[in-house]
Image (cartoon, helix red, strand yellow):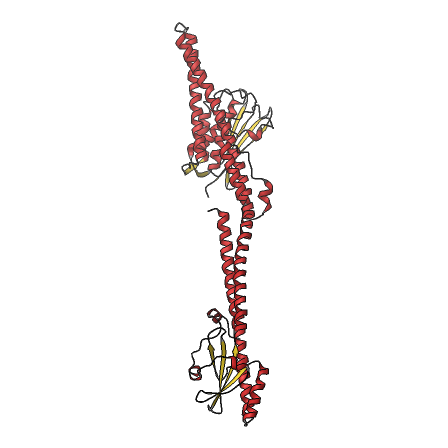
Length: 474
């Protein structure tokens, strides 16, 4: 069962139930009000005639009072204490005979239907002295018995219920039709409203299905449909579009990453394969050339190993693997990096600037890797007569690692993209000696895992400054 049908059924069912309850209560109030008015009229007429009868004594006067009661709208009968009919009006002759003793015994059911008992009584303040009765049949008759002259006689007011029964029956039919029509209309309106309300969901389903079939993450839910409703479903459609944008960007990054990784892996593999084939095919190769081929293959193998290690590091970063945490003295870590950097220098001058004692919680191996990436890049792009300067400054609750060089610098147009994987400032992607193009991406990931950040400042021909900002231990 579709969500639209379920919503329409819920709308129709609940509203239909509410309409049915309202109609039932309206029917109860309407029917009881009519029958209570008949009872009130009978009791009032009987009491009025009883008062008039008490004021006369001759049979002719009594008959005149009784026949004048037709103006009150009720038929009248006078019974003796023995239950024998003594006098009645002409309209009372058409009423059925009643057993007065049974009528006085009480227990007569109310004239209104059972559902009318839910409604409050219409005449609650005035309680008649006599007793009411009900004569079944077609039509039904309502009676009210009032004792006269200390129980010597009984006055009975009689009224037919056929007109009220027909009116109440027609009203019941109207209520049933209204409940049925109201339920049907509510279901239809609920069906239409559900279709309108669920339109963003239908568009989401269609868009998701189209993406699944075509694999194109560039598809979007129409903007007008996403913003038309302005409710939760509209915001869901807008969020779905944002998710598709993120997926498209991630897909393009992954696609480019796979392409770049294949390109980077192919280069050292090709070089290794070429040198090995050369060694295999030329057994009479001179020793000098053989040594050069062997060194070239070993150098490319080392570069391939570093590239694979960097790719594994980025794969762990993408998988969200946490780093180990322990206390790290950053000043000592910097001195360890300086010791290793001396063996990487190619004539450049290595200096140590500010060195403030700092400590933090982190992974010492990864933090050392971050600094070595900065130092390695500085050495690669700094001439042999240049200078590389390392500093560690405490700035409030953070520590700033800084590596400054006097190298070739980075073009301003390339500076925002240097942290992208495999990005090279030169469009030809010429390989720097031993580089993988992943160092700065790994450095940014390491800093982010420690709650810090990295950024570069560079001027062409004057050098580059790489800075890592890391939070210190409280």
